[in-house]
Image (cartoon, rainbow, N blue to C red; front, top):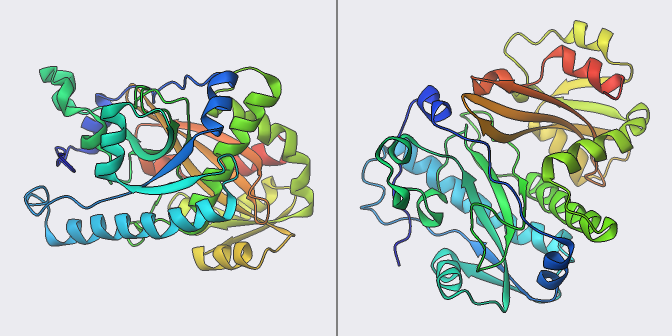
Length: 325
């Protein structure tokens, strides 16, 4: 089974120029109810061969391996901590996941790592084989829209029953996944699934995010908002932001946020930058305020930008948070 195929290293604008909106989700309430009764196969990522990695320089290889190592380490912890939809859980490497998909083994529901991006080779040459599950799984550009799919083996992997986005690893110094981000993603995914079953209607992930933020926004008044400085625009004006934001605000670092989550500080909320989709040449991002204990989305702001870095927090986002827009 072919594992990882290197994907062309394209420029930022080329990637956006040939991108489309991230996949639709297809899960109905009855689909998701059936999937809950199955064995959950959680994907553990495998590294590609040295031949696969031959076009990477030493720094790219280091980043690539760090990403896979951190994802594998934290996905297990996150599943064990918060996943409660499926009673039986097994961990499968990528080759085993590929075999389950190929054989359409319906005793499983899958929890897989996926990257929703379209690249120039498919768009220009019409090479559909270039865009497939194995090829895109390990793409680790910061601009990629990375998700965790909750999907059946027989489903189109580009259009899963449901997915939830992984927060951006937004600095070049820190390309690893963090436990809090995988926990957030799995909670968000499960809550979306439970809401679909409860309401008996399909709720798209982006609609779920916006609906939840509007419902929970009143909780902001009881929290200190820890804004990750790595997720702000370069010339973020803190004083202007404080004038816009009606509640307590602290611009801080990742370590402070991780401590607040680890210590379950009930009076804290923190920032998440969530790349959600490509549309034409634009990257759609959600800028979220998340409760440090429950992981609930408390507020959100939405932006589209041709440059990924411009999707970071700006002072005007905090104005939207205060007004629960």
